[in-house]
Length: 143
Image 1 (cartoon, one colour):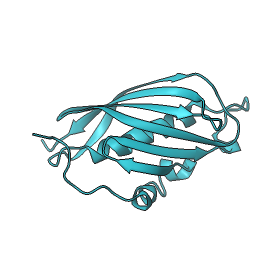
Image 2 (image 1 turned 180 degrees about the vertical axis):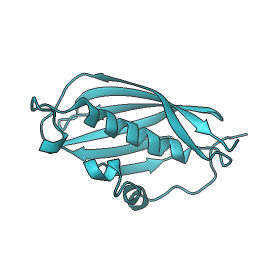
Image 3 (image 1 turned 120 degrees about the vertical axis):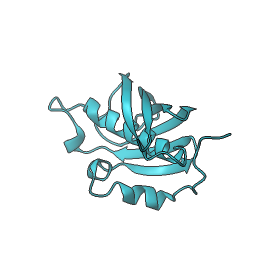
C-alpha cells in the first residue's frame, strides 16, 4: 500500500503563489518543474542574497534547496498526515556565484509513513554543481 497522497499535483503557478509573502517569495524562488518525487526550482541572484564579502551567502543556497525539498515533501505526504517538519539537514558547498540564476533539482530518496529523505543539487549559472544537500523530514499526524 502506498503512503503517498492521492491528491492531484499543483500547477507551477499554484506552487509559486504559495510562497508569496513568505521566505520563498521574499528571496525569489521560482518552481520550474513539479512531479511526485522530483522538483526543480531556480533563483536569480541579486546583491541582497550575497554575504558581506561579496560571495553568495550559504543560507541562500540552503534556502533554495530546503524549500525545493520541502515543497516536494508536501506532495508525498500520506493523506492522513497533517504536515511535516525538518529534523535534519546537511549541505556541502563546492562553489559559489555572484550573479546569474541558480537552479536546484530535488529528488525523493525515501517517502515513508513517518519520515521522508530528500537529496538536492544546486547548480551555478554555468551548470556546475555548487552544493549538495540532504534533508530528513518528520511526517506529522494529529495526536
